[in-house]
Length: 277
Image 1 (cartoon, helix red, strand yellow):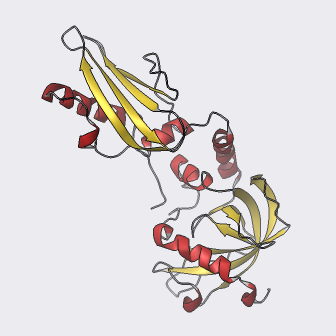
Image 2 (cartoon, helix red, strand yellow; image 1 turned 120 degrees about the horizontal axis):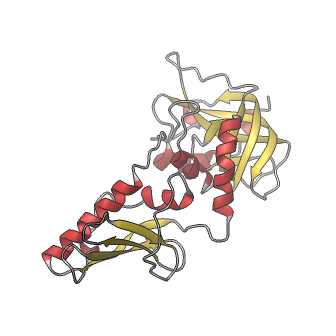
Image 3 (cartoon, helix red, strand yellow; image 1 turned 45 degrees about the horizontal axis):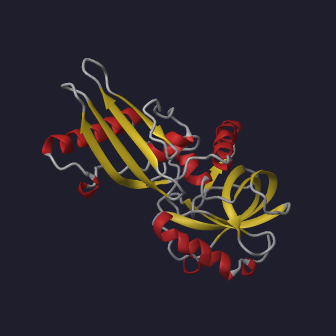
């Protein structure tokens, strides 16, 4: 194995910077990555690589600051099997750092010859990559790759839904009939143009709702299908509760209706399950 002094300070510093917010992120059981787990990894990654580990070395604690308790940091040399996504050139051999759980004797798992999926960005030196989180490595399997490919295709599409940052405004308006109302919710995003959710209630009918990803508020819009990028953007990033200052209604009845419709949308979306904690 190459001398560990060739692990550059930039590579160590880069992973250390990620460790504080992301050190606890890991898939707790092999093969148990949820849809949200996969998008969490794929979305910020410039490179998604299938690789086979050729060698590993456990860094000493003084060379691995920020590692969570029960984990160790490995220096890994791997052989590129395929570039699943990304356009940056990578060589046949790559080097990176990854945090892995240690056993009761303080030993890391033996990963030599195992195939993995890496979610990374270029580290600035030939042959080096930096994982987007300290544990952004999954065991490769045909199932994992098959589930990833449609996610990557959605993320790279020109009309990909933008990331949702929260609720900007919500307003519920009563209709002309008892039990009739329409609630419009506008979301903050990291892209251009508003995203809106509309909830329509009619007497003696089940409430219906939909999301519009354009400037047009469309009553004919429908909810996003589960385990799609549009579903993930909303289900995984709506706040747990409606911010009080986002509710624009003045009268208590309309404010209460907005709260109820917000909860209705959340329940309809279902939980955003993650196995990376």
